[in-house]
Image 1 (cartoon, rainbow, N blue to C red):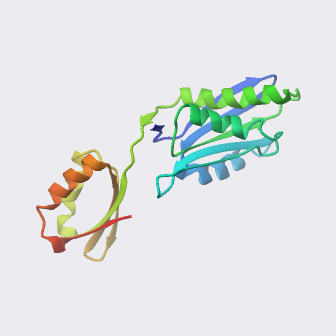
Image 2 (tube, rainbow, N blue to C red):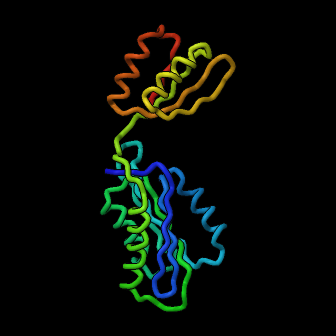
Length: 196
């Protein structure tokens, strides 16, 4: 399976209709859809499809034809995501109607081509299941934890709460083992750890 870390765009034109495709991480989908609708008020359709892994490691999928004939846009878009074995991603295709009807087969090809185009313009990264970790540490230990996370190229978020710091990050199995080894440098009461 593969995923993406950033949002990508592509544009194709078919018989005077313009198709703008936006591929984004699933967590950005709702905001992106809202922004795209505001930025393209004259567009006639906002078709989407997405696939993501839920907390039970089940693949959840959905799609919308957004007014296009049933099965001509959302499903073809979803099928392209499946074909590339993408997970935790969403695609939105904005259509500006050019005055020439494409027919059922034409619409299926157009939406499939738009999604293929944006995926081919994207950087796909191998997907791996990671645990969501949250730890609470004393402020005095923050630099050591940040050094560990940065050294292992792990993205993290931090929140300050009085004399404590909350760190949130994701770890695969190998990273989790390294993190457990690192944590042995601290007394058990110094780290409050939760798997989210």
